[in-house]
Length: 155
Image 1 (cartoon, one colour):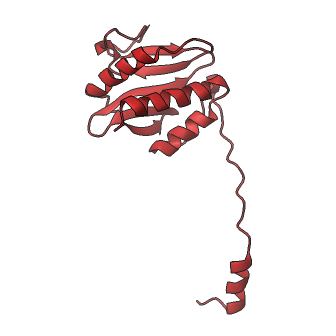
Image 2 (tube, rainbow, N blue to C red):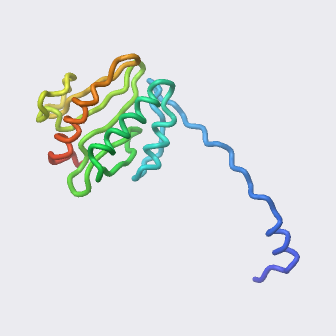
Image 3 (cartoon, one colour):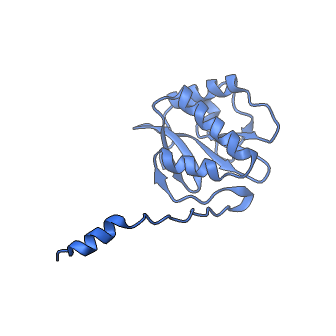
């Protein structure tokens, strides 16, 4: 079916529809509910939706991960950003809790020194970052490089 010339002219003059900003639901602890997807865009949406200081810290962590693991692969799954390498699986995730932002090293027990937070999962270690605490970027860079060099977690 062909459009009439009048209809085509009217469409050409029409103003684009402005879409309403999508509201992100914050789950317990201020963790954003972001649809499961691969790539940088959903990770950036997650980081932008984090409340307050957690957003700034999450963006800083993301930049450090990209800096020290330039070939990093990203996704959001289970309302958490995941970082990994193609063909190796995931080595790290982020997750927001009420009082802190948690960095999970899936093979953290193999890192030296080990990240401080123990897990019920034997190989997993946590780094919990709280508002106002200094981020040891040198130590974090070392852990990122070590973690990326290990076989990752494959769900």
